[in-house]
Amino acid sequence: MASHKGNAALAKDTAATKKEIDWEWGGPIGALCLTVFLPVIVVGLWAFCSKDSCSVYPPGFDSLDALWAFVSSGALTVTSTSAQVVAGWLAFQVSRWWCGNGVTL
Image (cartoon, rainbow, N blue to C red; front, side, top):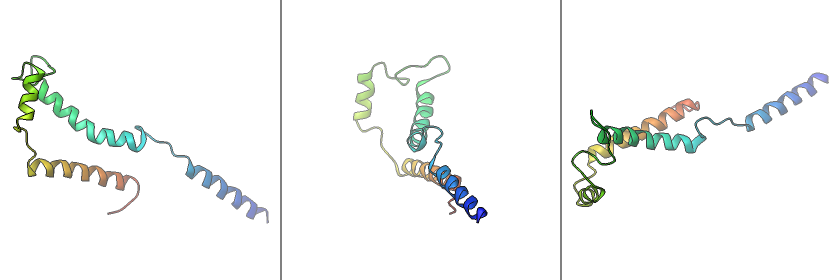
């Protein structure tokens, strides 16, 4: 009978431990922000920095008005290739999350 009480206490401790989650990197919101903003920051640094200096404006634009005129003119378009690259990146991140949580594909 004593071993039965010991098993019940162990099960209770295990259940209490399972409820406590220790999130790293801000939990799901932090992971989402890393997934979205890390590529944006890397591409932004690549676009706005040259060998000599970094600027708020990409090379060839001397003001925010010139940059906004370029963006609003429709010169920047989303192509099927760029959409596939972004979708592939997000699918890769989701698959890594699933594998990390023990979900098999």
